[in-house]
Amino acid sequence: MIDSTVPFDAAMVRTVLPLGASSLKRSAAPAQEIEKGNTALKEGIALRTNALVPGLKKVSSRLLPLCKTDKASVLGDTVEYLKLLQEKVKSLVIQAERRLRRATTASSAFAAVERRQLNRGRRTTANGTGPLEGAASNGGKPSFVICRFSRQTSNSLSFSRSLAVGGNGGPVHLSGEASANGSHPNPKARPSSGPPLPSTLHHLRLFSPTITLALIVIVQAEKEIQIAKSHLLSEKIEDVRRAERRCLLLERRNVEIAHRILTNRTQIDAVDARYQAAAREYRHALIFTPCLLIDACTNCTAIEELEEREKERDGFYAANRAEMEEFKERTRRFVSDTQEEVRKLRDWVSE
Image 1 (cartoon, rainbow, N blue to C red):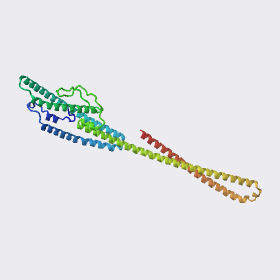
Image 2 (image 1 turned 90 degrees about the horizontal axis):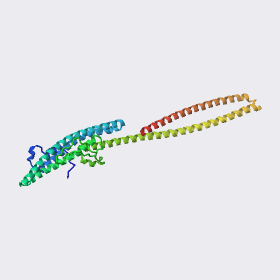
Image 3 (image 1 turned 90 degrees about the vertical axis):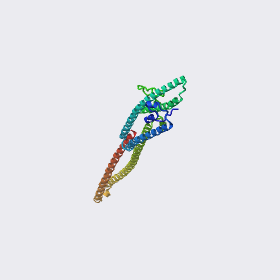
């Protein structure tokens, strides 16, 4: 069964598949050399991972503080970051294509040599010399390794190409990929659309570590952006609710002040009515009562005092009424300004 979890690497191909005429005379690579090749491959992947992750962490750490300041700047930095990742993926696609061509050429050459050895072994068997079991056993293992690396490289290349052009990120198989019999890939064939990207990240182990790390960093950056947006939105909603509570308190105070103004106005009207009634009665008694005509001179001073008190009272009431009217107008303007500010905040939150 072909192992699709091992990524393609040129060092592995050079280790497992030696090129040149001298490789025809050698026997199959022992298990120790294959283990050395796997160790070298793992070390190379670790070096490339350590070189790639710091740069991505630097870009992703720069996104979070920007999310708390301006929404437009955050979106712009996110777009730039995604463009940078697409450029990196495109460069990886180009490198993978070159490696695929070299591996395909090498596999085709080795397959041709293997076919020649098998044909030579059949001819010697037909002549009675004996079957070439050693040649068949020596040629089978490298061709199996070549098929495994060619198929893994084709899957990684298709996935990288779909990610670079902005597709759904699913694994795409190239039409014309290299096979174990040494067939060359068709350069004019386009990749066919595959299934969508898996929802969980453990499926990404089928692809190359570089693309897997890039996708993990993208998902983490998107999560950080969403968390920052939710925090900003919650803060704005809390500000709006605080403004609404303040508006309700101001409206309650306005109602209380209006009630006090109405109460004072009714009291002033009642006192004025009593004063007018007392003045009418006094004039009526002064005119129609003969006994009071004697005391007219003595009552003139009392009338003048009452008129002065009436003027003072009228002035006091007029000043209080003007002050109340001014306070009412000021309260009305403040309420209207607060309602307008609350409406603007609600429109901004709805946007």
